[in-house]
Length: 118
Image 1 (cartoon, rainbow, N blue to C red):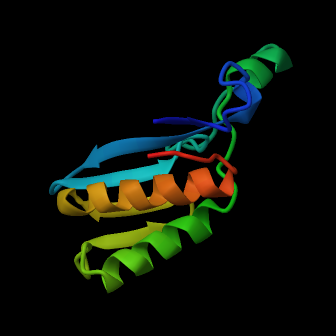
Image 2 (cartoon, one colour):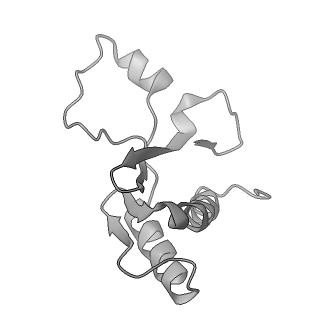
Image 3 (cartoon, rainbow, N blue to C red):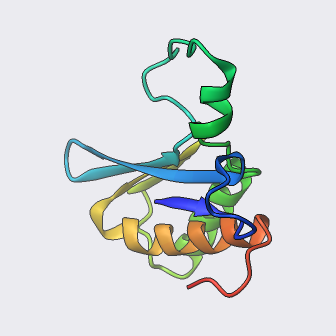
């Protein structure tokens, strides 16, 4: 899921994204897509490649996820013991991915200053 600040959707410098990964026991990991889940990534040969195509980190992702988890648990849309916030995202069961995705998306768009999102 790519997110953009709406000023110029072709401008890759303003892109953020969420990465969804399936894990065992019907678990799902939702992370800031600018972070590799596999450690280091080889550096591109040209810095312009990074500037033109790389995803940018989501500002305040750790705080956004913590708030989304806290609100989901309070609203009982998330099951205790079935969700865990991590530094760059969240691990949850299949039932929690919908409520978490909506909450994280809404909070990220607000943080990026994007109005009128669904």
